[in-house]
Length: 304
Image 1 (cartoon, rainbow, N blue to C red):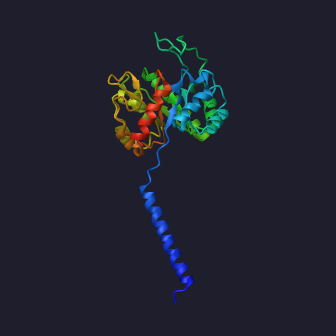
Image 2 (cartoon, one colour):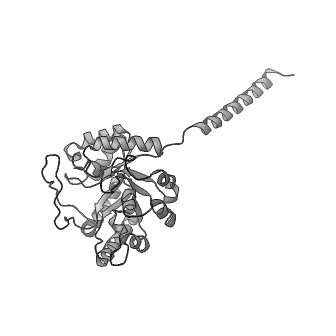
Image 3 (cartoon, one colour):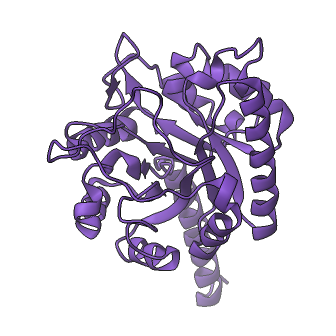
C-alpha cells in the first residue's frame, strides 16, 4: 500500500533532488565572481593629505575594495600608525593589501624640480624612509599593519654598480619580509627594460633575486615588453599588477580603457602570472576621482 509514510519519503526525495538540480543549474548560470579592484593611493598624492578620511571614502564609494598605500606628505601612513590606518580602512570596507617604499634615500634627478601641488607651489615633503637605511623598521611596520606585501617602488639602476647594490638591498629585504611573514615585491618603471652597460636591469632582478614582482603593465609596454610573454617566461612571479593606460606617444597617462594598452589578453593571462591583486594607478592626474571612476567602469565592464 502506498501509505502516507511512503508518499512523504518519495515526495521529499523528489523535492530534494529538484532543489539540488535547481541549485546546480542556478550556479552554472550565475556570473563568475569578479576579482577585487584595487587602487594605488599615489593617484591621489596631490590631495589625499588634505582630507585623508574623506578621500578614502570617495574611493570606496566608486567601488574599489583594495588599497595599496604609498608615501604621504603627513608622514607615517597618511598621518596614522600602521595599525590605525588598517583599522580605518577596514571600517569603510577597504582592505589594505600592500605598501610602497623607496629603495634608497629620495633625491631629485639633476635639473629636476619638485612637481607643483594644487596651490601651484612646489610640493614640500618630509624625509622619506627607505630600504637602504630603514629596512627593518619598514618591514616590521608593514607586518604589524597586516599588509600582505611590502613593495619597493624604485631603486637606482643607472650603472651596473647601482644595480648590484640594489640587488643586495632587495635580497636582504626579501629575507626580512619572509621572517616577518609577509611578501616582498619590486615595482618597475620603463627604465628597467633598457640595457645598462650591456645588461637589462629587469632581467638581472629576475635572475639574481627570488622576490616577487609587481608588474606595472603600462610601463612594461613602454619599455618594449609584452606582459603576457613575461608571465609565460616566469609563471607565478607576478602576484601584483599596476594598471594604467598610455596615449599613442606612450608619454601621457590616461584612465584605463582610453589609451593604447590592450588589456584583454593581459587579464586573460592572470592565472599564468599568479596575479592576486591589481591596482589602478594614474600618476598626477588633473582630476583623480574622475580618472579612477572611468578606469573602474572600464575594468568591471570589460575585463573581469
